[in-house]
Image 1 (tube, rainbow, N blue to C red):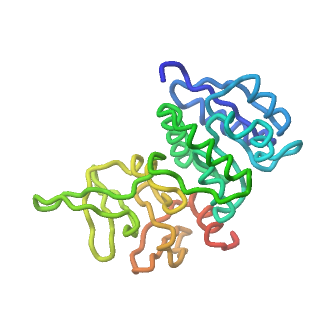
Image 2 (cartoon, helix red, strand yellow):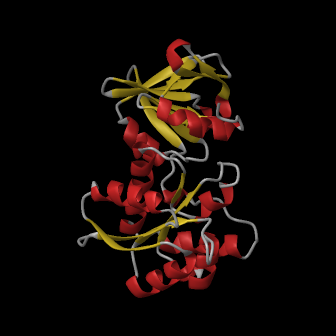
Image 3 (cartoon, one colour):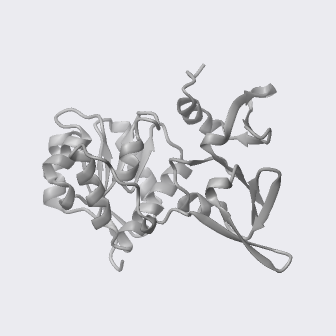
Length: 263
């Protein structure tokens, strides 16, 4: 994409809008096409400004985010990242209908992952497939699963003792950083792969995996318990007994996913 990515920010909360604008300001080749603070203004802005990408709040006065999409028409929507305070269970439908979603409050790393995925979708011209999934969501029918072209990894090749093995992502319990490598933890085994954590995070399905620390990604359905340590630090215990650290900034979103009320 030779020209800057034109982005529209839609949120009824001034602080939420400013946070997105600040984060976008740190991204290269981005032009803020406009901002809107309600659903009606969002419809006008999308039609008048024709942005490449819209950060769209779901719960707003005037029209909700989904009502904005209905008014514009799924086929005419730009790439969309939904922003919401809903938990991840409520977002399963949105996950297959948008490039990504951000659950408030989100941290900088989660924003960067969603934004990188959106930029890639625009550059690869995958918006047609996203529009079809939005249309299915709005019509209330079965929402199809994301196609493999959406970029989510299903398998990872690892080399060990001169042999190349294929590890299915459905078998991975956790991924941890190890210098310039990452370790894929599968049961009692660990496979070493020369890859960046950020790259893997961007290519793993966020409905199944979450980065809980700068050095750890876990498969969500492998979580057994969230443990509070002395000094206020947190650790995740997985069902196989493995423990991984949790950044304090990630604790609240994990508690929401687990259905645990924050203290």
